[in-house]
Length: 152
Image (cartoon, rainbow, N blue to C red; front, side):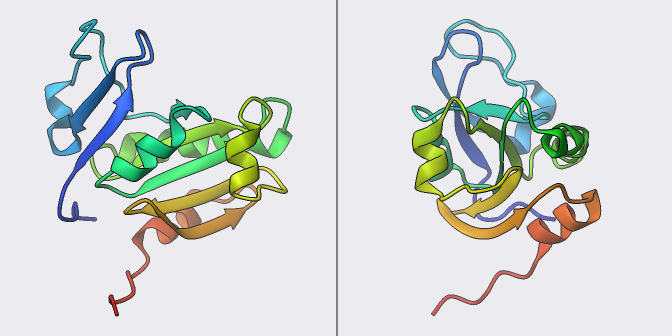
């Protein structure tokens, strides 16, 4: 999958909380936080919160797959290694994020999450796909690679 028009994402540093604009096309350069200098690891799912969710989704120039999950959920635990593998394989082209629905109820409610895991695909800040339950890697690839409808 080729990167679309842009390939930048804005994410908070997991160590210091500073917001960083990262060019996903330059993942091999191993981006670091502009404030604390620690690595920004986007080859694995990043955790989002009620406070960080909207900005990350709105400013992402690449597709974002968000896993709405809970720590106690068996199917969510089964989905975790699939998402880890997907994030690693698609690093630079897709951002993979996770939202703990128990700790981030405002965001879970906003997207009417009624069962977990729920995977939502965002492009240009808009929801463009949704899958309920644990899905195989092939279905996750299909969700992201589906043809984009022509603009009207």
